[in-house]
Image (tube, rainbow, N blue to C red; front, side):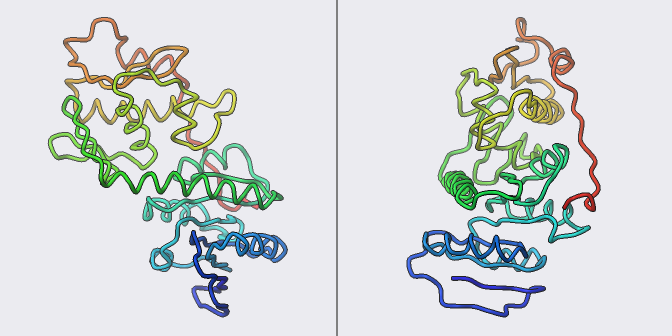
Amino acid sequence: MTERIAAGREIERPASAPGSALRVAVLDTDSGFLQVLGKRLERLGWEHRVIASPVPIDTVVAMRLNAIVIDLAVLGPQAWDYLERLCSSLPGLGVVVCTGQSTVAQRVRGLRMGADDWLTKPCHPEELLARLEAVVRRRRRAEARDERPAIHAGEVEIRADRFQAYVAERSVDLTRREFELIELLAGAEGRVLEREEIYQRVWGYAMARGDRSVDVFVRKVRQKLEKASPGWRYIHTHFGVGYRFSPEPVDGIALVAPADVEASLEAPEVEPVVEPASVS
């Protein structure tokens, strides 16, 4: 099914293909790109909508999508705000940014806001489809979380069905990415996970050389856990290797470096500030 929507108004709606496997929306105005991509989506039997301009988040919710492809240039000055609201409002939605030339800071900012992937135009539509499939596979695995029992570790309760961790029934206030990280570490049952493995399983693709995103997010999660549960240490650093999740009372830690020492040895956290108008 192909639908074209302008300013939230449907102006064309041919019949949908029977037995469609996925529902995808494409927020883009590049007619050539849309034509090529649309043909491939139809061959796959995916239902898809073409959105010509930003629509309210509630409208996106009503579409019941598996994933959405977004060209930030179409969003204009509200690009970053819209992307952040979309990712936070729909934690189960796969979000792939497919836009023009961008800086490293812009790509990092978008991924940290909750986008699952980022491609730079021009790109091959088959690569975009493969990345969409990878994103949806991750989201479908996340849906199975509803059936998983809560993980109790020290004072922390990790609730997969709520994408959140709690201490004494108070939320630790984790973002979606932070939750995926702590869930992965806790599920390893004390095994050390290498940084590359963490990145592959949480972000969904191979880690680039020199990327310190894992260290930055581990620091964020560790700080939130220490604030919520100061009598325990949960995430331990194995320098040059990765991280291990093992709840230990503070008084019982003898061989693990204090969190403040570990943090000082990790890369400093720098949140890039990029003006939306610079996206093209």
